[in-house]
Image (spheres, rainbow, N blue to C red):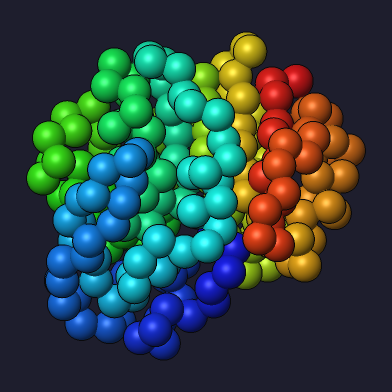
Length: 207
């Protein structure tokens, strides 16, 4: 995701097994127009609440279709996956994160909210042949350019025909250069969909 490096515990949110104590606590947030209580913990991305980049994505991206296969790439404690699940009750929503604590929290939060069609997994647990009608992501810019490009090379081409991805990227952390890279390296149409609060929302279409 975009605007945080280490978590407030000193861990990196892109660590598979955070070293910080797994101390769960409730968090009240607003998602899809509803006030909800979710569970968070140290050692994940933005455990203190909804980060600015994700909030921009949720505000600016168009409502998802009522059904389909959706992907939240870099799910953290689940705000994007949960929002997709709340808005599209007939969709199959998958959250993916290398952080095992994040995966568990997203699954627990989805279960607590009765969202049986939302689940989370690590990348190794997801088949490489799946195709997604929609991808929403606040990608982990701070893992470095090479690792970020490898991440996007794996997941963006998994868009189904007529599928669309929406990525939120902080403007001063390379949103424009990332747009150019997606077009030149992945040869996928990529356009600036929205700008808000120092962030760009990029729209990527199936090649």
